[in-house]
Structures are given as structure tokens and as C-alpha cells.
Length: 104
Image 1 (tube, rainbow, N blue to C red):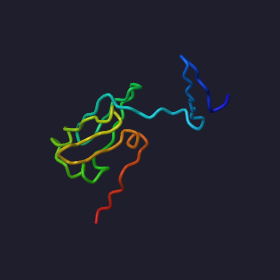
Image 2: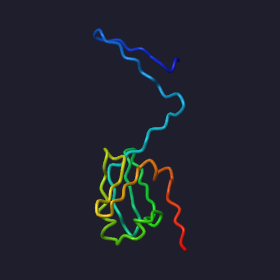
Image 3: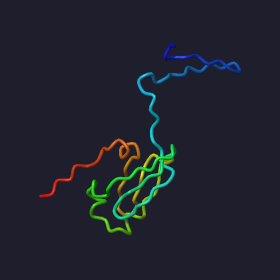
Image 4: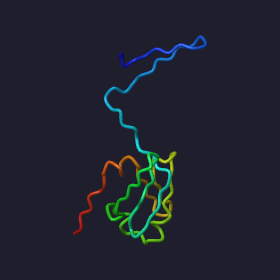
């Protein structure tokens, strides 16, 4: 199959480009919450994913009450803590892209 397909309908044509390199779908969260210094995500595929808040400098310094104020943004593609001015992507967390925190 050609990676480019032509679609015609109602006098219009549209070229669809198919991603032949990856069949993975970017993860999207339905729900986010914090519990015992862990951040949890419920994904659209039904999986529950969690990561320690201490993997991120700003989150590691936040009190539990501020961690619990996590909100989903960008249609479930991002996490936001307004008071902390911290944003993380759902895809980045699921892929394990955490900050390296160096304690001196």
C-alpha cells in the first residue's frame, strides 16, 4: 500500500498521509490524581499509570495538598499544576522521560 492515498468525495480530493513508521497511538489521560506522593493517570485504553512526584524538582518540593491539585489539560495530553506553574506531558510520563534530579 502506498503511504499516500487519495480520497475523493463530493467534488473534493484530500490526500491522506499514513504514518508507516509507527502504529502507536499517543496516550491520553481521562483522569489524574495524586496519592501518597505518587501521580496517577487513568488512560483511555483503561490502563492506570503512576510515577513518583519526586522525579520532578518542582513536584518534589510541593506539599501533598498542592500535588492533589493536578489538572488535565490539552484534551488529556498534559498535566498542569497551576499554583506550582508546572506542566508535564502524558506521553512523556508514560514513556518514562523524567528529570534527573541531582542532590548536592
